[in-house]
Image (cartoon, rainbow, N blue to C red; front, side):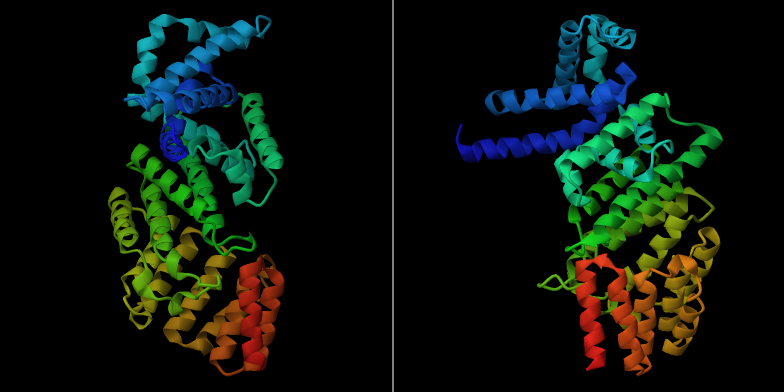
Length: 420
């Protein structure tokens, strides 16, 4: 096989793996009752695919092939370890039962329930938030440990250890492989959505490092959002979150210049916004409103994003409507950041003096003391009012508070321009 053909086949295998991995791990977790064991067996099947598919071709039902291979590898593993604990002996009995073979082959085609169970397991509140994020990317996203580590700017060994600890914590807590029901499900859905949105936000506005964005994380969060929207079509906030991510991601290519410097929303070339993502986001937003009489926080945030998406020019933005959405959001999900964003919207709707008054009301809030966007917003309104020296000091302060190098350079340049 030529090198070029080999690369193409490997890319196809990678694409298949990204699609099939959550289904495969879900089915194996259902069989083994252990997420760690399920992932090990899934990885074994991937290794086998990388060895055989370039030679034999990708099978017609790759998911079934991977699941059957994982089952056989599990049997081999059991045979090599005759002194395993009773749990593994039980796994061996399940895996050896040939009466289950056709069920295994068919499982990939009807696996939605198991994937949903896997979603709730990986996002279980028994885990710290950063562990939920890493485990979701690994198990649900099919990303390599190296990719996840790179996205979060940690070493591969540190990320591997984090994921291993998460799986051990689930095992120790004896977390059931099930979809919560009733009130428990209602309480747990926000845990799932929080994980996905954290992944998206870290990609959309990187908190540290040199890059303003990490597209891999944005793309993965949207993909997971689409999967969960299909699994939970009646959950309004699932569609609201998906709408929010799609509408925000539509602006990605216009958010920085050729040198990587950030471009503020109102200065962006809206012709570069992705109209396909905007259309998809609007559809998801409509589904969110159709699915419930109660408007949730993600749906409200998506509604704010839709006001920007509908405006072909910055001056067409309906800032009064945005302020209205923030008034609802501050009730649905009160937070200092919501108050700051509302203050900025007030400044756009009613003028910089009104905006500055609202921003300065937040100066005593302890949660915003080290939040660079508070100083940045204050600097923006001061600059609009012609108070350039004060504005420059605020932008310099903001630059000292951010850990993102791209943002820091932008804020210092703004401070220098105003000082000059």
